[in-house]
Structures are given as C-alpha cells and as structure tokens.
Image (tube, rainbow, N blue to C red; front, side):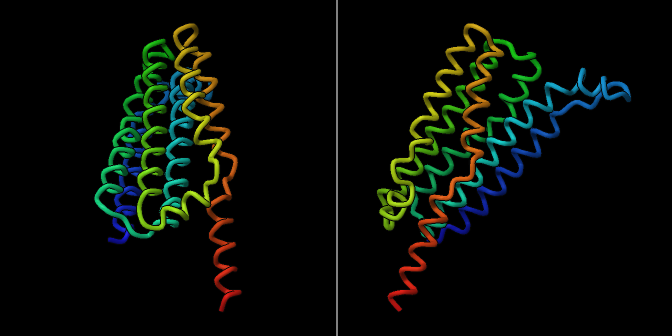
Length: 200
C-alpha cells in the first residue's frame, strides 16, 4: 500500500501533540514582561525544546518516506511505535515544567527522548529490510547523528541524577545537532533523478 495514508495520520498525530503542548502553557498572572518570565518563562523554554524535537522528527519522517513510497503492516506498526513515544512528550514536558526541573521528571523526559530515538531507528531498520530498503541505506550512509544521539540522551539522563539542570544540556545539544539541515535524502533523490534523466 502507498505511504500517503501513514504520512497523513502521522502528520495529524504530531499536530495534535504540538497543540496539546501549547495548551499546557500557563499565561502570566499579571500584565508585565517580568511576570511573563516569572510565571511562564520556564514553560516556554521546555515547550520550545519539545517543539523543536517534534519538528525534527516530522522533518526526518517526511524525508524517510520519500524513499519508501509503499509500506506494509510491519512498517505501520513500527511507525505507531514511534508515534506512541512522541505522543508522550506533552506529558513529560508538562511534568518537567511543573517540577521546575527536578531530578525524576528530567530523567523521565530524557527516557522519553531516548525511547523516541530508538523507535525511529527501529522504523528505519524495518524500512531498510523491505522493498526499496537499499535506497534508505544508501541515502543515510553511516548515519552518525542517528547512532550518537542515544548516547547523548544517556549522558543527559546520567547527569540528571547529579544536577537536573545539567541534565538538560545534552538534550539541548542533541536538538541543536539535529537542527543543522540534513541534506542526505534530498541529495540522494536529486542525484538519482539526474541519473534517470541522463539515461533517458
């Protein structure tokens, strides 16, 4: 079956996740900028971090299915597994904010990020095993960022046991690493389109 329905469903879930997260933001109790920072500042920061992660997954998910326009039941379940972990981000983000960055919520937030990263890796592997999986392997190459990210999250989880605020540093660092535009899939598609034109 074509991947269009899977992509549309995934887009809808991620849009809902972002909506739920923004509804968790608390407006300031007074009308000054200082009140905004005092009441909602931390919530805005945790929202931005989680929003960036959702954006990263949405972007990479879109590129991934440009290489695999047809899917089977295994891919559908692997995709649902990824969406499950991403759908927990509003909960873990809210707990992180409400706790004012306490130890356990920071650890759980990191575990959520780690689980989503592993779920995305599993989705990639399932796609690579199927028809046209060779395209994904060739386009992603060694996928250094994908392999290193879980260890960054583990570092953040470990640091959270010592100083919770320090645990956030690797989470932010991983987001920054992934924010750098990844042109591998676009470059691969462009090169193969050119090769197809040359053959004609």
